[in-house]
Length: 200
Image (cartoon, rainbow, N blue to C red):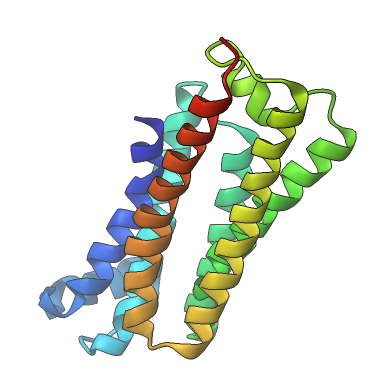
């Protein structure tokens, strides 16, 4: 359920971009008047509208989590990155800022895990799962390191697609591959690993 909630802003970003040309120009003009931006009905403006939608939806989500006392440190960091990348994208009219945002987030996660492994008293993955799963410290460490590799790899994959493929291909890659397929496959592989190595 938590993973689905965290995915909502990405989902709205994707829909906003894909269906941008179907939005009546009067609505686009209302958005321009409210937020002080200058969008038109051309498909090339879709990335800017989607960026604005991402900023708004994640901010609303963050506020809801804050009010219900469910906000975590990672939400503060993610909100900061989204707003900085979003404002830069809209101000400079350069979509590259929002394109590299996922890489920054993924690498931020990787650094967080690495620092925790070096300075932390307890393995993050172990802390989250130790009540349901019993593994020795070496296997917990391997599991944690696999997440570091996953985040680093996803960051480079996003950067590669952002630089060498079209904007449409990047949006589709971000939604389908980075947002759904890779996380699901990786979690399944984690589950298989845990299943074979759980202490009886």
